[in-house]
Length: 256
Image (tube, rainbow, N blue to C red; front, side):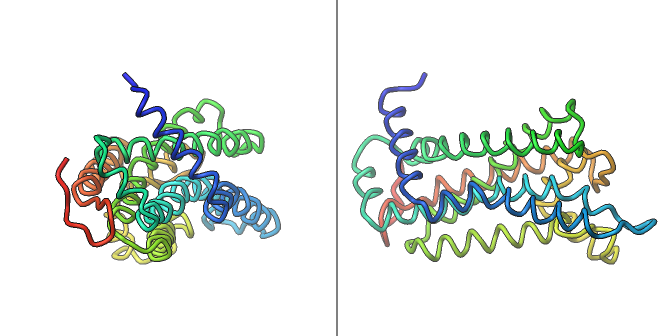
């Protein structure tokens, strides 16, 4: 049951998100801008016989950027900002608790990703890149990715005191995960040893889940294993985020 305090705290975080235009609008529109750019590139670059189909990666890449932007860019930096301006220190004197704070802070991010996914999947279906029957699965996969990367975002924002440092680390994690997941370029283009190593990263398992829903996707792992890895990573990172969360700069860990 959602209490009044929880509802009010979630609304507070929603207002806080909207008041941070440098985070909010970038994360909201960046995936669509990249989608348009890469679709344009794919339309003008001729497809060579036997070469990997780059278009197969465009939709998963846009979903990946939407998920990681909400989970990292508009999570780690704003959370560190709340610590810097003393808001978290005040909340730490209330019965809110770290776990509830993180859940309510994530609420507007989930709504944001939901809106983005509806728009992205509508575009994908309209362009004929994804079969309509696969849209619900892609939406569910996006939520799984949000849980995993969101936990990482709270792990970063829950520890770093500087909003700029938290944002930069989150961006580094986002770009590293994208380029190492096989979505920025087909895995067929890298040596087998490198492909095997990169295949062990949680971000690659998330990318694999999306590729299972693409017409000619070539995932490295079975669906059940990818789901277990993503959920397991989300659980471990989420537990660490709650246990290591700091209410104020330089404060010792508070058990609640």
